[in-house]
Length: 274
Ligand SMILES: [Zn+2]
Image (cartoon, rainbow, N blue to C red):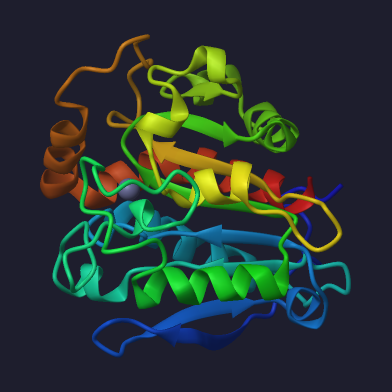
């Protein structure tokens, strides 16, 4: 077992390639280790599906940077792919949606609904960004996927096969580090039944819709960053949780990031070696 940041021989070399183009022809970039590039499987980390959720992008870039900076390249570096910005047009326009006003995390096939509260696109897979991600996942067949969002302050495992991954990410944290989050690994703990909650999301598709040719399904955890990096998470979120995070981000993005970075990196590392 590797200890993040303490093993000087553990460093990851990453190469970068484009998985496809956004609606406005921006590349969707994947950074991958040689072990990830050379065989199916591995761990895939995704940020920036909603272009205005800046912390999800920056924290993946800082995680990658930390792995790159530590010492010599290790032969045992994990099979890891990092896709920090799944919605490059949304990032540029500082919006949740893509350039056509579609919420990409409602455009996946499983549970897709034309009546979704968020705009879900004309049909499942109508958007170039979701098609690029679908085609890549079908080709790479990652064993584990962690997708970052804000700000429900929880680890949300879709599908029974995802419980061990969520549990190992949770176990990587100290009691104090867990305080701003909750672990949600079964439907019975859901605030809303999942299908109504995030219809057509990546989590729905990977967790309950997708099967690889060998019959296996990927483990997927949606890591919802906390609306407050320090306060313990209440059982019921305040209705303005997202607005609170946006405000905190506007006032002191660096402060918010540095408060959550250590614990998020621990969870991401746990996902790499699960
Ligand atoms: Zn989001």
